[in-house]
Length: 402
Image 1: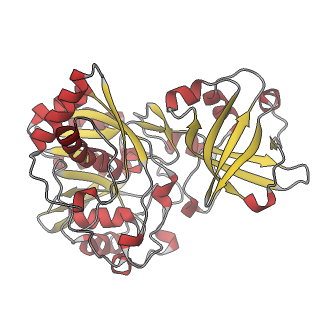
Image 2 (image 1 turned 180 degrees about the vertical axis):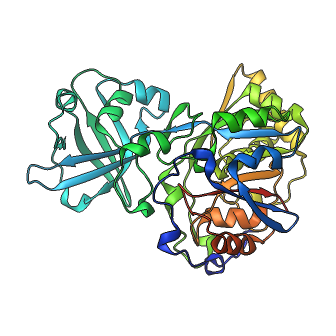
Image 3 (image 1 turned 90 degrees about the horizontal axis):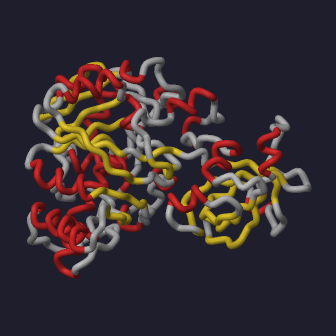
């Protein structure tokens, strides 16, 4: 049964000055709030290894943010900003970043009403030779409501990954109310980012340094990775009064067979770094159910977890995925999820969550409330009252599931 939740019940006052506009000088010098057994306290992020339970499995999202924001100009002089969301032709990220002459993306286009059907040229105010040689052009193929299909073409035979690196900018969150700066190229990226595809960083991971990671591993805490490419929908507020009327965006993810086998064998507490890792890990259960009942995996729908009672154990579901991959000679599971985690959700995989502080009336705040048994306001009141910094470049928390 779909939960009937009013988004106004998940609102709080976030003063502009509490939004961290820039990262701290050191990643791990951020404040760290802890929530366990209903009690809240605070430390610095360097204390995280001492707070985490020994003999756990810690899971990171190793997606990499791409410079997905491009600025074009019409002959009339009008500026058109194009924000690449997800590949359309080719659809696979690896193939997309390898193409060397043309491709199509689903995009958010700023000022789209002023773009007719003319071919746009990339804006090059600094007259950069590399940009000029690429001669990147954009053509509007189709409008899809809030998004559009855009075709890009370029001249020098470079792979599209190089095109973005040369011509694009890192799409920092809109609530920072500033342009991308040099510091963002390094700091709006986790140290362990590996696979290109996200248009937003999994920001819980921005606090980790080599020293913190080494200290975690020294406590007999295993570390592993999944890869979920974070979409621009992560910034979208819930605009409808009832959460049941909100539509979640699809996010693609990949987990390896080796990871599935380790997760299945672990039989210990699982620590998720970031809400994207939570969404991936919890989605695996429902994909496993699909493998049991239909013989193959399928994407996880927004309300699948609430649609019926599930009789299978986590072990049965994960085993079904492992068996499917082995039977079909596959080394990794590629799927997508639209899962929404709201109060009433039954967590089956994740026990501990490391995460930042999220926007009012957001799906991420609903996830936090679900994880801590509705105690989100106690946590956020404490953070607001103890000078914690909020949102992407803000401070961190480690939450133990209620």
